[in-house]
Image 1: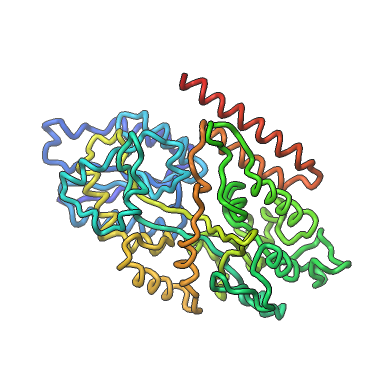
Image 2: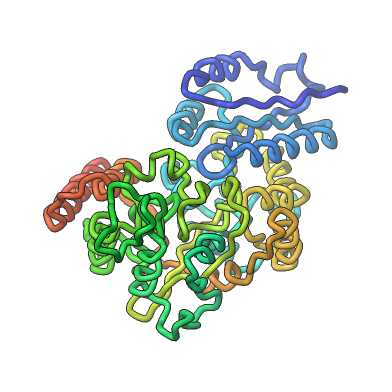
Length: 461
């Protein structure tokens, strides 16, 4: 039987038509459909998967799976990230909800806590070999009261991407590429040193750097540093892991995050080496993808950023600076999950095994994740070398895995989505208003988070 691969790209206006198609789909249990393949829907959008190279690779995986399976038809739904949460919420309440979600990280899964199937019975029934993964990584996905709700797939360490050309043009030594190593001048590679280097690499239209008394902050053409594609929790974790939730479930501001708030604010509005919101959204900084513009010297982000470097080709990786003598390299980890709402969990697990097996190398190459299987890591980095032949020090990424944040910056919170939105609003406020009373802004944030957490407590009582 000739099968056609179905691929759906979802924007908010497309949700209604998608729901209509879902509602009118003939149930697989009817006799007339007895010989038809089971349809398994793969939902993409909560994390990676929306960039053109990733879409191309995912579509190929779907086509390859359908070519080799007669009993299962795999369909993919790719939602734009800004509507993915609402779209999945809507589809979960439809007659035919998706079966598989992913790639999805910790933060993306938090909004759907309790909706993921325990894989243990499916693994046992299929005779699936868990020993191919490090036991500690498997245990990472064991949740009390929910079971094993994921399997290790891709790890995304964070580090600094730096533009060699901008460093060379300024005659400034590159940042260190080994943890524990000093900067070229022998001083510790910490956030004070990063500030110094970043200010030297921040230039106005007349070529003055940010230390110059003639520097014009209204006409900056090059920035020294940016925390790329992260929220306040992710950025603040550079100063140490923490949480807005204390052991009693109340809202708190970790002291190291408060210190980071003042450091960040000065970096944007006093020292000017980190772009403000207006600069970051400008054409100068590629309308929100600063490092890819070629006008930012250093960007702290995750390995998945290999997806999105634009025309910047002469880049390399450097290690995180320390803060108070401690290095924290925030970590992302993506996986695929089966939804409890799936009407065909056994077939969904067969697809899941395919995504973790034959399709994993191809997907991880475009997602930028270090494979969970140790024996697959050399081949993964060899593939990246083919894409980026300038000679990247990938050992930095591997070494960064030894400094993860615990608790993770994407950890769950009471009333997660509302709390997450409030924290993002705080980060936006810092980058858009240069006249804040920071103490007042912090106190307001914690007061608002407490009210949001209390809402969740009230609903659970």
